[in-house]
Structure formats: structure tokens, C-alpha cells
Length: 619
Image (cartoon, rainbow, N blue to C red; front, side):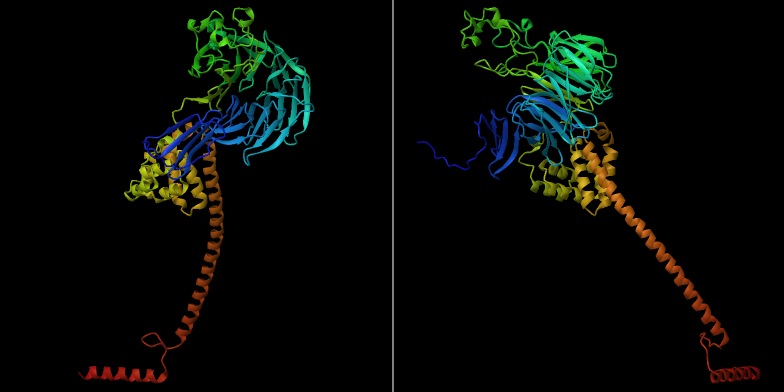
């Protein structure tokens, strides 16, 4: 007989098929994954709450951009969504879904409060990161598909390049008005960007040229840089004195934008060479695809350049020495196309590779046409004309962080972040069944303040965290701060900033700030760019409290001056009264106690004195 089962819960998790399920060791948490939508959910069935809810791009990710402070990463994908991610935790916290077509590029403004994206739906949209809304939409006079995007240094000019016609459109971010249309390219635009140090716009195209425009004076192209192949991407050094471009031949060109001279080249065909495709009848070293870079980015110091393309590799080159420093392999997933290097003879038949047998043509794989790469130059998607379009391992965009400590890649596997720092962490893995508010209270009663505070940080409950922090005695703050891990300091600073604004215990929180700066000052200075917003919030709270207290002290100083003057006047009047009473007393006779007496009493006292003297004489 089969045992009986009782249904505990029924969850409606996703609109698509759930492809994976996992249960933790204690059976409290259930994890569900939906491959089609890229969803991940962790459900606690006892409390009926979600522990974690995350969803990535359910198609390829096309573009990434770092915020100026390096804390946020914006991504755009083929699903038409723009997502914002926390660079430290890897969590997505905002999703914009206004686009109706694939998003090709995303860019942050210089202040970091606006994200602009371009899409194949024919629109360029600007999103406000304060209210999280789409506040500007830019369109062209005629319907077109935008392939690239750029913002000037002031954040007031938006520039986008189109697929057809081959023009560059210039708008004003404030008014959304079309300012100019730049014509001159004879092929689709592959990239546009502003020179950070000079008032020029740089554009690259499939017409084998890179053009430099003076958009502020509305002049024609200032300079045209010719290449031997279709230009797929372009990048400019942070100081604006060098431009790097990559073409279809797999070479990197380094130009001087001032006089348009070629400073040097790097041959990267062998470095970017990836694996063979499953329908290839040759090995990877003889393949014609994935031999060019499609994304470039300079490092923060301008000494190195990061390059990625339609391959499983990402390369870092030293510009001055023209050498390959390191090659990163972004994935080893054998389910993707372009991973395997060698040809397996078992998959070869008389009719050709097994992957070609299902072709409608019934091609044998022996014709020369079967060996040609018919994809368009710079194409970043699979050939949808085929019956099967397997995912191909490729890197569509690479970016360095503003501080140069990490770089990110938008790949087939998703958003990947490579960092020199070891403080990247994932909060939910710190949780277990022993981390509960009750245990935190027990530790607090046992005066184990550091353990109680760390447990509250792991639970991430603001009320509990504030209680634990304010219960720590002032003489124990030094030992508690010394025991807390470095990656929790930022969250404590956020709590301190809120406490300074709302709590009356000013000296208590000032002691916290002073102790943290003393013990973890070097770490804060090292990661100042990542913690810039947190440090600014603490500084803003301290400045506001200082201004309010200084105004109160200034008012109190005036009050004290007034009171001291009034006291001096009162002392002077009382002294004058005392002097006047003393003069009156001197004029009148006084008793032995200092008070005045009448004449009868004075006569009696004089006779008594004479009687005493006579008695002494007789004796």
C-alpha cells in the first residue's frame, strides 16, 4: 500500500516551466529555478515567506555600464529590459521594462543619477534613479534601429548611432529635442563615444572607418581613420589622448586623436580564438569565426586594455609593451556552442557532422559553402535562419570599474564580475537555523555584544540591528568594532547615519564613528569609491547635526551674555542698597548685637556700669 500524502502548500512561482528544485539539509528552505525566465526563488514553507527572489535576463545580455562610484552596474539585454545590480552583492534591485525591443547599450550620467539606454525598437530612453521612472524618450524623425549610445561629460547631450540609415543623432537630455543629425558614414554604426578630455565625438562603423566629429561647433567630420576591415568597436583612453579600435581582421589599432596618426597595432586573432562550433567540420584553430574583438575598454590608469568578442576568452593587453598579460576563460559549460577545441571523429558521418544531418538542405558538409561564415560582420546573435540556434559562448561587452579594482563581462552565462578584492560576499549563505532573533537576544543578555551584533547583521532586520547597536556600552565599542568583519562595516555606517539623524544619543554614535575610522580607516580609504554613497550619507548626517547644534550653541551664547549682564546689574543695585543702609546705621546708636536702642535703655546700661566700677574700688 502506498503511504498517504497531505498537501501543505500550493505555490504559483512562475509562468514558465520550473526546471530545478533543491531543498536544504534541514528541510526548511525550498529553492526553485526557472531556466526560461532566469528566475531563482527561495521559499521558507513554515513562515510562508520568500527568503530570496531574483530574476536575470532571460535572453542574452548585450551591454553593461558601471556607475561613477562603482557601486552599481546597469545591464541591457535582448529581452528589452534594463536592470540595475549591486556590484558587491550581485543582487538585482531595479528592472525597467519600457523597451519593446533588444537593448543594445546602457550608459550612466556623470552624476550617476540617470541611466540612458538605446534599443532596436527605435527609441532611446532615460531613467531616473531617484524615483525609478522613465522620464525622457528620444526618437528619430524616421523610424530607425539604434545600435550604440553615448553621453557627454556634462550629461546634457545624448548621442546615438543607427543601423539604417547610417547617421548619428544628437539630442538634448533636458528638453528631448533633436539638435543635429550627423551624416557621413556609409555603413551601420558600431560605436559612438565622447572624448573625456577634448570636445570631440568619436564614431565607428562597418564602412571601415572611425570618424572624429566636432559636434559642439556643428562641423563635418574632423578626422577619418581608415582600417583594413569593418570596425566593430572603439574605446578612448581616460585622459583622451589615445583611441583604440578593433576591426574584423582581429587587430587592435591605437590612434592619436589629435593628428590622426597610427601609434601601433596588436594582432589578436590567435588570442581571441575560441572553440569550434558543433556544425564545424574543422578544428578551432582552422575556424573562420570568433577571430575578432567586439568590445573594448581601457583600464582606469590607461595602461591596459580589456578586449572580448565572440569567443569564450577575454584578453587583457599591456598597451605600451604590446603583449598579452592574461587570458580569462569565462565558461567551461559544454552545453554551449564554441567550447570544444578539437574535432571528435565519432560525431562525423559520411553525410558530414551529426549536427548537420537535420538541415533542410540535407547538406553533406563537404561543399565549400558549408565552411563559410555567412554571419554579418559584428553580428552578436545567432543565425536565426537555421532550424537550430544553440547558445554560443561569447562576450558581448566588457567594462572596467572606475577604481580599476574589478571588471565585468556580459556573457552568455550572464553577468560576471572579476575583482582583485576578496570582500565580495553573498548574504544568505551566512544564515543557518541557529541565526535567529531569540539567539541574538540570548547573546546580548550574556554580554557577548560582538556576536549579537553580527547575528543581527546576518538577519538584516533593522529594528533588531538598531537595538543591538544601541545596547552596546560605550566602553565596549572598541572591542566590538575590532571583532566585526570588514564587509559588515558599510552596513554599520548606514545604521549610524540613520541613528545620528533620528536618535538623541549623539555622543554614543559619534563614538561609533570615531572608533570605526580609527580601526578600519585604511580599509575605508582603500574601498572609498565603493562606499562613497555610504560615507556621504554619514558625512551629511554629521554636517546637519553640526549645523543644528552650532545654531543652538550660538543662541545659548547670546542668552548667557544677557543673563550675565543682568546679574552684574543686580549685584550693583544690591551693593548700593547695602551701602545706604550702612550710612543710616552709623548715625544711630547700636546695641551689642548691632541694632539701634532707645534712650532709656542707654541710661540703664550706663548706671549699671558705674555700679560695677564702685564695687571693684571698695574691694
